[in-house]
Length: 133
Image 1: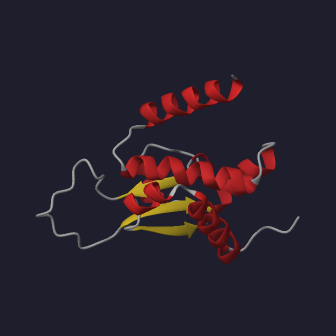
Image 2: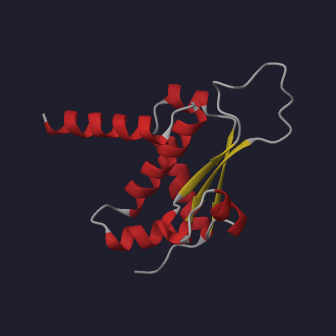
């Protein structure tokens, strides 16, 4: 299978974004989605992540729980999707590339809403439990 280009990968991400509920998208419409091969070395260092393949995505911005109407937002909030680590995960997983991209995108949008990793994992576990019922 041919590895998707940045453009193809971005198109898959935008399709995944388009499948999200409209209410969710409206609350996240100020987010810019970017595709990069890997996180910058400084980002990995700041997050204490020694292996670039261990970071699939990143939310960069001020979450909605901390934003103020008086804040001057000089830069849009951004979600970075890291193409090479996501492709690597897809090769090692039974999940489709589209599913993994959608999962990472939702996870990073969760940060936009002020959810921590632990809170999102708890919600994911709860949702997985409901799917089994």
